[in-house]
Image 1 (cartoon, rainbow, N blue to C red):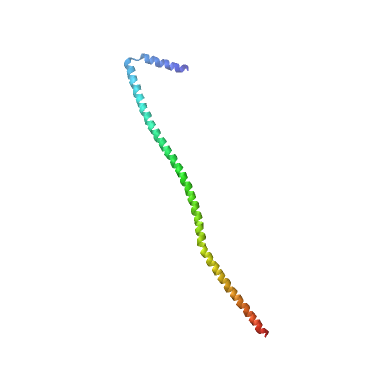
Image 2: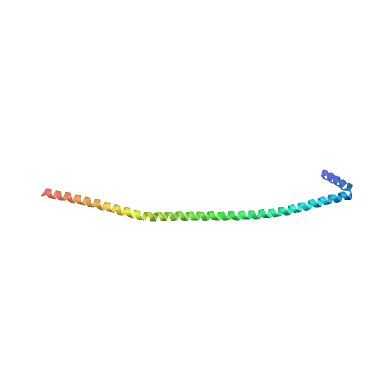
Length: 129
């Protein structure tokens, strides 16, 4: 704390030692620096406002991106379900055809077995006479 007062004392001695012309020059320099700092602060305010608008825009975009991602997930689920239904519909005629072929084969085999059985019975009946 003593050093701060010592600095103040040196400053006061320097100010008292200045002439009015030196003080006027110093005042002009301080005034010019003050105006320069005011302009710099105004520029910084504009930049901060721009940065805040940009930040808000990024937040809105992030929210929108999240919504789009959720929507895409729902669409993907719907498309998957729809694809399963289409597959089932496409397989149905094939299953019918396979069933028909299977029944025709069973009918032919049944007819052959019946004919064979009838032939054996005919031979047994003919041999028994």
